[in-house]
Length: 285
Image (cartoon, rainbow, N blue to C red; front, side):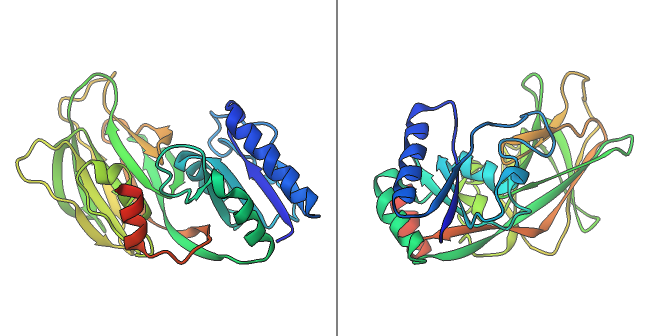
């Protein structure tokens, strides 16, 4: 690789210093490195953190500095570019951002020498349809969460798979997750851990009002539709949908969200052929 683009949180001094170090290191070795200078409109439906149109055409790799959140944002913002992403962990766990900042120099040397491989990760697409018929779409690498909003209260959800009724939940919310997202919110809600190279859809209820509730594992070719129930709905309450913890879309009473496997994928740069089991042991202790 010869040309790189670095994404980082401009509000955090350690991240700014690390970005400057990477740029200097690469340029001393005759390579090109661009830094993301400014953020973008956080309220935009399409440009949340990184404007893909401002990435130079010669860029071969995007380096995301921060935690898993930074990498998740980058994966969604740049999904149409097909650029491979490398996460450098400046946070705590860093399950997706596998490279620790203490190994940055060695990692850059290997990127320059083309000593890496690329792992494709499944993504989800969700279409929110309001009761009036208005449609809004977005994409997620980890998960799409439909949850309550407003005051503390449970919400009624009806779940359909390929338009066939599956079940109803009275719960705080529902997590529809990819295998990549199985170690995120879904895991905290009691869902299973799934190898990230699998291709399937996980459906996990959040604090359901039932004595028995298990994650449902579905094939990747189905469409999961979550419908917000009408019972006990209040104007200031209701439900909302979030994509990787960002871009909240409100279904509203009688609204629904259809979720399926996206044709688009995230391309993650991996430096080591570390087994899923070993990575799980080291990251999650």
